[in-house]
Length: 217
Image (cartoon, rainbow, N blue to C red):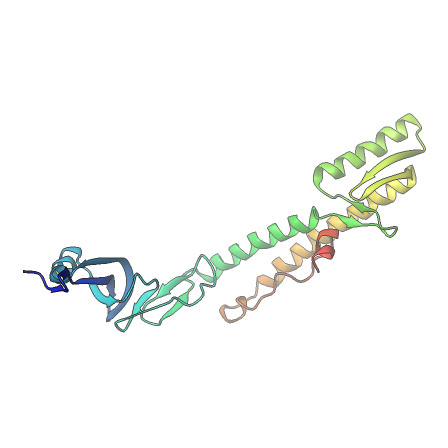
């Protein structure tokens, strides 16, 4: 007859975990379940897992027979080492550099298309379609002999001479080139990074300001 308390079956909440080689009292929790006390050993045997008793459906991992929370995970690439009780990055140094180069390319794209602010306060979009539109405007205005145009900036309308539109185009070109120069500088700097240096490398430096980055400072 199963054990009872005040006429009710006695229940046990178990964290079932996969024991770590060389450290069997620690490991990753596979499931937490509540069972009749009389079935504890049977459930553990059928699952093929070790268990610890817990007071509730706790989350984390088993460390020396106790459920504890995981420390903060540094990145999605990190995996947990249940022997050392810490997150480790299993990637090679070159794989980590490849991932960093992808982040740099994303950061360059964000800066490249983030817009600029002209000296007169006019905010200009710098997406590739926006740059194409400005180039087409200059060509068609020149062909039609138009000396000034109504120009829709990100923060309102302006009436610009054709030379002022060319100044906008020049400013955008310089901004875009600065973004690619920053990306290249990061690539060059990352070539010689060692395992000890790579985690401290700052990807946020070197980028030109955009009106998006100015607004969030």
